[in-house]
Image 1 (spheres, helix red, strand yellow):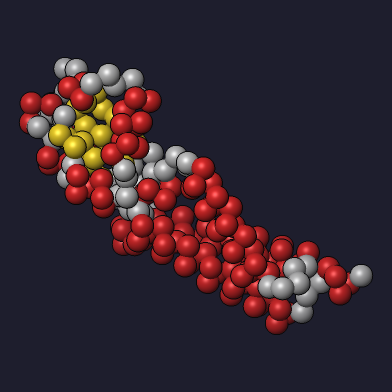
Image 2: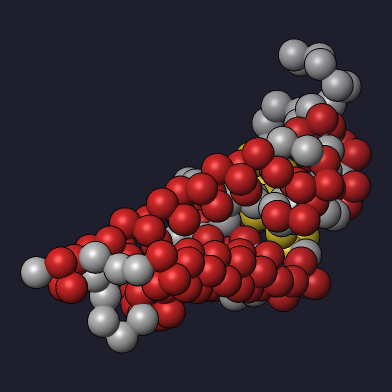
Length: 186
């Protein structure tokens, strides 16, 4: 029974290193491919996430998974997540780990280059606009792909505080007439 549940110290080390390697590889892939990987999932995206989990599990636990190996893999993931969270609190860590927000629309103008950069198809942008209650492009002040993969739609009406666009790739492209004075509440 112990053979089915336990592992040796060497096997535990192999599980921890395998888990860390796959975690870092997945982190790198998300960093390279950008926020789109994290955005709302289509059926295709859901299949990919399930496959990622399967690959991660197989790589971390090897051919004959055991309870102790699973516990080591989970603990390794929790520790890596905690370390990553701590690194993000430093400027260099945030830059290395997180993607910056990216402007997808500046007023009515679609930022085609940024759509491509974020791997967002125009039909996905249109879907996000509809979900935000936008009936025509003239209602849009700005659309931003957030680091989390969420899409923020800022509508015309109240001026946008320029601080909200600070750090947004392409944020300077938002027309000046849509911006307010920083800190001004209208």
